[in-house]
Image (cartoon, rainbow, N blue to C red):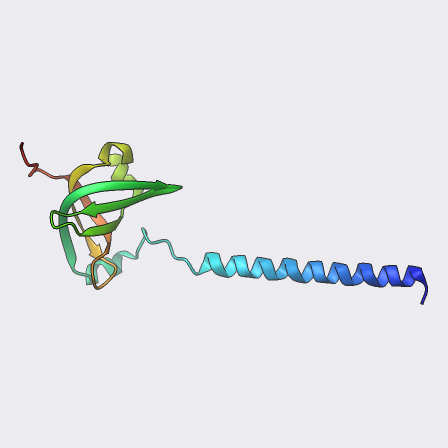
Length: 130
């Protein structure tokens, strides 16, 4: 085989390897994205079937790319809150709610109630006076 034929064969194989890797990476990305459902937009019919929970405590926001909302009750239990952005904006936005005492009503996503979809959120009326 001539040197030119070897170069053409190597170029063709390199192109095939590149195409295969590109397709494999695209498939992995597609599967990763498709398997993660948005947690803050459940079907309304699902919420009707779940028990509602009311919690009062201190709302803390952890900023890591996007806000993560946590509620710590008076017994020290921490619950992750999944809150719609519209609900947060109605009360002045995340910065105005950080480290405030609130009452939430929502539905639990787990048996141990460590993650709740918030349906209503209000500032708590029972602030302790010093």
